[in-house]
Length: 114
Image 1 (cartoon, rainbow, N blue to C red):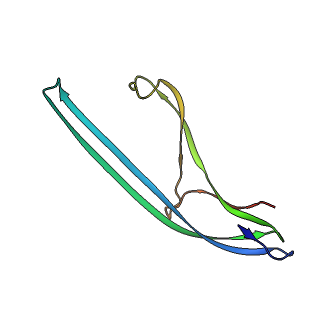
Image 2: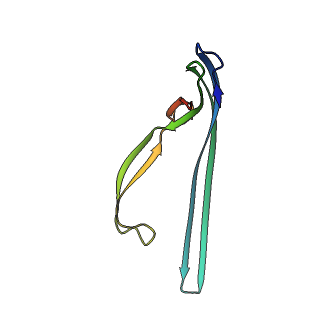
Image 3: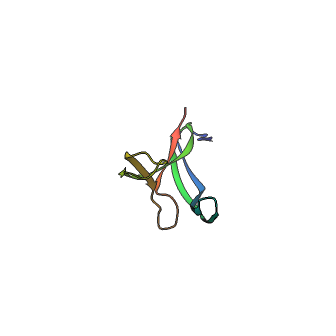
């Protein structure tokens, strides 16, 4: 919780970190009717950590927290005959964008709670 101790307002510098992880996991199997079977799996993961500083002007005597809201890009896609695990029909897929420094694109704000 951040509190501005004066009635005139405050300017507060805040440094925060973001850690984002991208991962892919694939497994492929093959079999011949209880005679032979084999499988191959692959996993990849990458974590990026960035540190960002922002200055917030806090109203006098206000208390609150710093919030982050990612900005998502969403698309409607259609699944058709993808197998038993994926039902047919339209659904929405959303993903966050990254800034050039690897941090997530979004809004950082002071949320007043008093």
